[in-house]
Image (cartoon, rainbow, N blue to C red; front, side, top):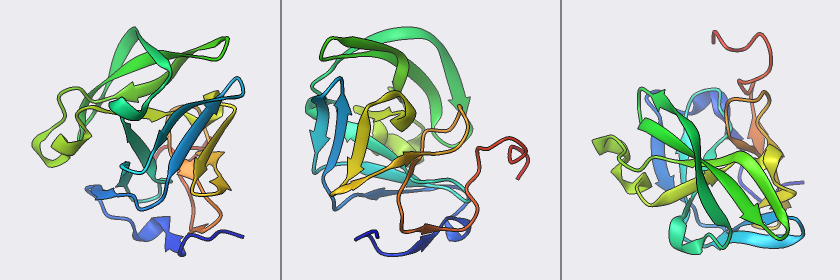
Length: 157
């Protein structure tokens, strides 16, 4: 059972909203904490699990720029990182928006991690599940209700 308040992903806004996170976030790779913060931000978008962004100063892993970028109509151009933590390197396991759009300017200097690529990610004491599929990077917690986009066949809604 989640200690987070219930939220329905179908009620999240479009365009997305950006908000501060009141819980500690922690990311584990190869048995080591590679990021931990009480100063995170999250993006809420209709039918998506929240995407959490950690200030770069709170990332303990080594981030090595990876090839390729992607474009979000709301946030701008994302760059990707290979994440090195413990004795492990995971390719394209994190991303950031170095020059986000004006509405998402607070994301500059923040990094998001794919939960599917890490050993574990936590919101407070709750271990998250990765958002379905291999494109979106939301973190699914037990308090979320509604249909979450990402699985095959959900790309069009």
